[in-house]
Length: 432
Image (cartoon, rainbow, N blue to C red):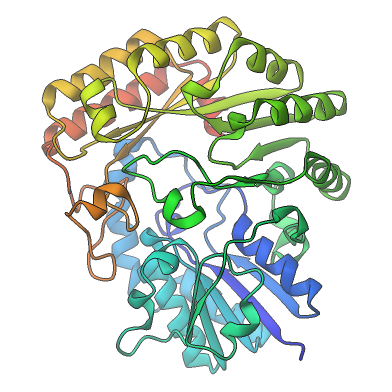
């Protein structure tokens, strides 16, 4: 039986007027499958804010209270907007995607929908997959929680309280994300519609990351032909010329990377991706450069080998320096993720991170404060944060779960802000 389904990505950064680009690729993938099954589907990304302010890291920390203050402000324009959209669309079902940092916001969206009279509220996403009890306890407005990949089991969520999905083995068989279902599609910048997932899963087991809990360690790849066809379709329909491949480690399979580069190279697209320093070499990088790759993101995380080992990152400082040298020699713009505040990290470890950045010279530094998100190795070791009650976020110092004192975290954040303000490439990188 056909249903009118509304899928919502809750607001968070928009409350702080922080710029937010891209699309909710997971919700749109679900929308594609639901449309294939004959349902009427709309998607609201209530956090999309491309014209917001690109705050530096210290400003993000300082603006976090704006989110907290507006979270329970029922008269805030964002809540009024979501309420009006639900009333106008009159869905039979509302689905809410929840990550840990948006848990409270997502539950607020669900309550708005429930108060309007929507007959079924379904929650899914990373936080729900790992801690479904957080959305089903007490007087929660959630009627059903989906654990795992929801594309093939959403119909069960219309009847069952808790749905546990098997991992989808053949992800090439999935419908393409239904970008056309986005409410306000005309407001989206063409390149924001170019976010594409070409694989699910990561073989790594970094202690700060929940990827293994969400996707598993066995990586499932889409056929390259299918990826290229989707890129061409997005280009033809929306004028998109710049794409971001959202895979955890795009260069994991070198044969596949070579195949992709050979197929995409003559199309004139720009594309960027995320990978690891131990998954880059000269031959692969040269193929990427020659096929339109315009930026690479890598997780350096720390300049201290002790901290890298604590993180179970599986890389060493020598590998970091070799990858940085390779990227810089090929004039490849690259973003360097770093993290501060993990358990047992100390002052000298943070100093080593700043020293390493000055040595390897990335184009842009993206700094984060360690937060024990559910499903991570660190959270399993203890020090869990109750996201249903506490306000923890990797750009906030409200909850510090590690051992680095507040003043040292501020020092690193200020260092990253100054580094980026002095970098000629940083402003362009930030847009990717």
